[in-house]
Each structure stands twice: as structure tokens, then as C-alpha cells.
Image 1 (tube, rainbow, N blue to C red):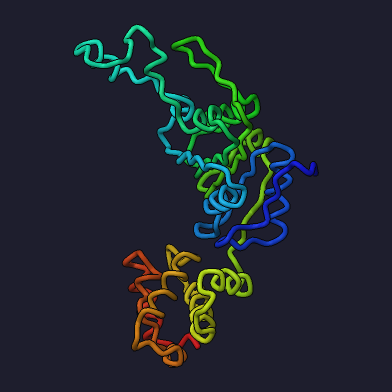
Image 2 (cartoon, rainbow, N blue to C red; image 1 turned 90 degrees about the vertical axis):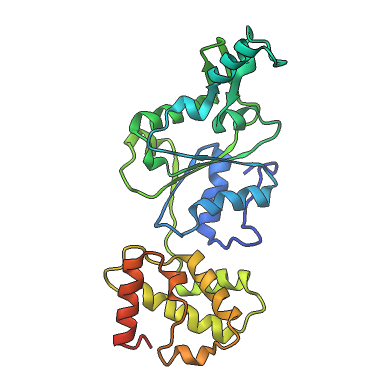
Length: 282
């Protein structure tokens, strides 16, 4: 790897294993998009934030929608503003100059940025196959055309590209073939303790230990639609710590307060409360 190549090893509040760090760095070295899969809450989206923070690069986020067309991610031609300007004539813009009404989309913003950026393309699996494949054509070539003004936009700097998928539908083979891939597994208890330790460096270890043990046992309850993820655990520990009457020893007796912080769907919350009331988790 070139000495000039940026190296990512984590950020202040993002803990990662060596394998994930290696695939991030090799993707930057090879100038290839990094495709991340994993269940919600495993840190796919936050990885892009961490890369931007650690490497001091601006972060640009494209939140993919099912109805989105590729051109929306590249640029928009603001015809409504141009029409209003032509009617009322109180703008400094020249209505005969269409370029004044071109607005860059998220990919366009990454291309014209004055410095290298991190481009996060979040939940690509929401888009149709044509969007996915055409987008990678643009990212391969690092350019796109604005047909309204017959202009080609070329990237000033190749962005670091992170793409996430929740695997709601399969991605095409050509798409997969043009990305590096990494599946982020849900943290095991050992890794979770490291993550929690970063967020709560001075917190009572007994509280952390019993909360993590309870968290993993709660995740094992059958029939839960949305299992709690790392973010919910962090918020739960924060709630437990803020309660002056909470004693970690009470959790071993079956007292599990603030389950609504962990389970956000009413059906899940009711099911878990019923299970907890009928049997001890410890």
C-alpha cells in the first residue's frame, strides 16, 4: 500500500475488528466501492461516519428510496424556480442560462467537492436493478452528463464509497462483482463490551456486565420482530444508569426495567414482558 494512502483503524466511538479495517483500507487502495451487509444495528451506516471522522473527510449521504431515479442522485434541473423567475423577474439569475438552475444531487456533490469525500450510499437494496447497475457505471467512470446543458461533470477527487444493504432483496451479480464485500456480524459479547466501554469508560462494570448478559438473553426470545441492536443497548444502559433507584443486583432477581427502550414495537414489548414475567432469564 502506498505511504500516501490513508489508513483507517477506527474512530473515537467506533470499534471494529481487524478484518473490517483491512477491507476498508484495501477498498480505498483499489479505489473500489465497499458493500456492507448485516442486520440493522451492526454499524454499517456508522462505519462511513467513522471513516469520515478518522480521515477528516467530508461525509455525503445518499439515502436511497424505492422511487429514486439515478438522475436524482446526480443532479436536478430546477424547472419550477426557473419558471417563477421568468414570470416575476425579481431574481439575479439569468433565466436564459439553464446552468443557473442545475442543482447537484448527492453523487454530484461528491464529484464537484474541492476535497476528497466519503460518499455513503445507504440501503441500496431499496433501488431497482437498473438504478444499481447504472450508478456503478457512473462511479466506475467518475463522470456523468447533464443533458440539459450538454455538459460532462468529472470528479475532481475519487470519493471513498461505502454502500450499505439490509438484504431486503438480492443485488445483481454485475453489481456484486464491482464491489468489495463485507458482512458485519452482530457483535458477540466480548466485542460488545469493548463497544460499551468506549461509550461508558467510567461506568460501574457490574451494571455493564448484567445489562449485556440480559441484553443477549432478551435477543434470544422467540417471535420478536425487531430485535434490539447496539444503539438500543447503549440507550438502555444510559437509562439504567440515570435511575438512582436501580441496583444491578436486582436484575439478577428478574427485575428488568425500561424494556421499552430496547423493544420499540408494541407487539415485541408485550411479548417480551410476558416472557420475562413467566420465567427468569438468569
